[in-house]
Length: 134
Image (cartoon, rainbow, N blue to C red):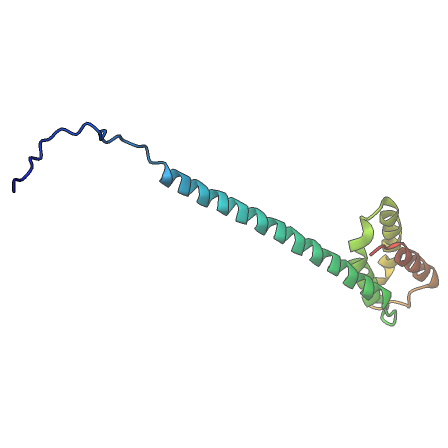
């Protein structure tokens, strides 16, 4: 048997052609797009959770204001100021009533010994409490 020569020209097979390879660029682009998508989903989840907590904070503050005890006038005045502030910016009318309530509560805050909260201030507080929407 004779061995064939390796120098035989082949007419059916074309020579090798250089093909550009973009697979690494596509892979990096896919990873960047996935990270951007995850960042967007994380941001939307963060917004959802914080808004939900804000609503819960408002509900908790409303419950505290609703159950307010006026035995200790100084403590009640500070609590009304603290928790009532969450609802003051809901409407301009709420802001006006809240500011009026603050001026009426000021004498009960900054003294060592205070009298009981008067009926007029309590009625302003009840009006403010009725205006709150939770």
